[in-house]
Length: 437
Image 1: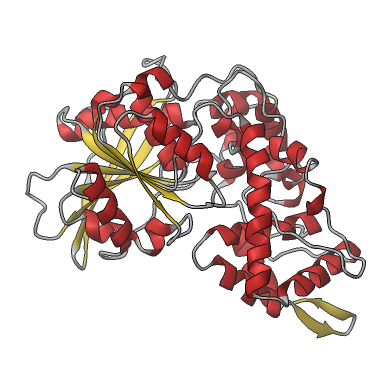
Image 2: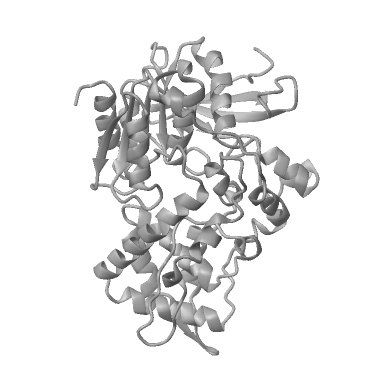
C-alpha cells in the first residue's frame, strides 16, 4: 500500500457494494513535497459486478463546500450510472470526510490570514488536481468519466482546461460557467432571475406575498433567533428564495409561509416549527465553505470580489423591503453577504478569514479558453432554462466556446434535475455524449 493511499474497506447495501477510499494529497499541488491533506471518496458498484472491469465515473458535487451525497440503495442518477460504471463519490477538499474546514478546525491553522491562505487552495483548480492525483491510483492511469452537477460542472470545465488527458468523457448538469464573467457580472445577471422566480411563485400562490410581508414586518420589529442560533433578520428571511431554484421549492416555500405564526402570551410570534424548517434551509453549519468561498469560484481576473452580491444588490432597489400597504416583498436566492458573518453562528468565528478572502487579489485563471476551443473530449451538458443559480445565456455562450460540446436545453427541470429525475437526465446526457440522440 502506497503512503498516499490508505487501505480500503467495504460494506454492502441492497444492490450496492460501497468501498471507502482515503488519499493523502498535497495541500498545494505546486509543492508536492509540502503539507498534505486527506481526501475521502466512496466507491459505489452494483452488487454482483464488483470484480467486473467497469469504467470509472467520478461525481463532482455542487456547492462549493458540499460533500458528495450518501447513497441509500440504487436511486436517481446513481441507478442509471451503475448500469455501466464504477462510481466514485468524491468529498471535495474541506468537505465531508475529507480533512474538514470549518469553525472548529480552521483555528488550528493559526491566524485569520493563515486560514485565508490555506483556503485559497480550495477552489476548482485544486479539486481537479486532487482528481488527477487520485486517478492513476484507482485506474492504473486510464482516463475516467466525470459527472459534474452545478459547481461540480464548473470543476469539470476546469478539468477540461488543464487536464483533459485524464478524461474519457464529461457530463454536466446545470453547471456550465461563464469563462470570462466576474462575480459582478454573475450577480448582475442573477438578480433579475431572482425577481422572475419570485413573481412566478406569487402567481402560483397569490397569498404568499402578503404572508411574506407580514413575516418581514414582524422581523423588522422583533428579534427572532432560530434553534441553531442564527439571527433571523429580514435579509436572512429573504434568502429563503434559494428554494425557488429547485423542482419542488416553490411548494416547500408556500408550506413554510402558511404556518409561520403562533399566538403566545406576548402576542404573535414565529413558531418553533417554522424556525426549525427555516434553520434547515439557511444553516451553514454543514457547509461553511459555501459562504466563505462562494464568490471566489467566480474570481479569476486578479481582482478581489469585495462582497459582490451585496454591492450589486444596491443596483436593484426592488429587493428592498417595503412595509407600507401595496409594497412589494421579493425573496433573494443564491447570494452571500457580509452580514451573514454575524447572523450565522457557523460563520461568526470565521468572519475575519472571510473578509480577507473577499479582499484577496491575484486569483489565478480557472479556465483556458484557447484549449477549450480545441477540446477533443466528448462533452454533453444539460442547461436548465432560466436556471436560478446558473445564468442560461452564460452557459450557452460557454457551450459554443467548447469544441464538440453537445447541449440539452430544457425547461422540464429546475437546477436540481439530476437529483429530482436523475435517471432520465443522466440517460439523456449519456446518449448525447455518445452521439446516440
